[in-house]
Image (cartoon, rainbow, N blue to C red; front, side):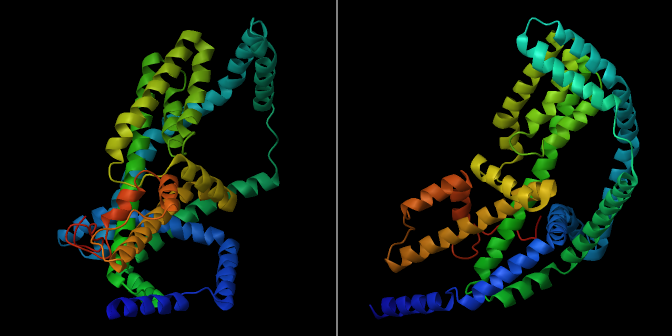
Length: 403
């Protein structure tokens, strides 16, 4: 009884200590305002950390073979540069040629399509479809003349991309080099009551984010190759360019695969209705296989967000920082999901211990609703780590002990 009273008093003391005071609320608002003002820097920092998480596994493998941490990172960087340059030299010239040829032939193709739709018996195609095709033809044939601001914007955009790439490599290098120190400083600053549990959550977040990123890149490669092979078999015009579009749009949540398939169907429709139907049927089958076979195998054990959570995260990220913010919103939302799941699990265990039970309770009704919002794997992720690290539940450490 005395132990239970002491435990209750300790919980009340911690609750009073963690209460939100006006000063702490003011500090949070000031920090949020500063983050909004420097959101480009924040996005660059997040992107660099995600990049470092993505390449950490090969860095750790090289370390196990005797490489120092700095040497392992530089070797991985060199490999990425060689692979990127090879892909650029092999893929970019034919894609550029196809893009230029498409730009030259697009007005003729749109003119033929508009004429065909104008004489069509379908009222929608003969009116709305014809008007859209003619407007697109006019826009391509009469592009706006370049101005000084256009040239400045182009130079600024290219310079920004190069600066972002260099910054990503530099920040990623120092993050991997100083990661143990960075983690220690963060723990000292936050001063958690259970550092072992916080370390376990940190490792869990990094492991699942790394798996998710590698799986997403593999999905983009699979979809791009599959779509390109089918387009080539059907002899769809500009099939290589369409395959690239299909692979890149796979990164867009929910609607990305359909956005990548629309240009292929439209270009196939210029040749014949049968070819367009064959492309559309293939895209539907590919999407079905992706959802039922490819994604469960590639994304096995990674974070699963519900469609509602994905939609809200993309909207919020896009509003915050445009397209790049929408893409980075998914890993951020996934990180929040893992943390919330772990916190809920820890609180559930505290309640179970207070009431003298050996197992966690079912929890309040709102928790099931929250789990449905977070995704079908939130419950499993929450239960993967108890109150602290154990031999069976701790995820693979990311500082050199395992992959």
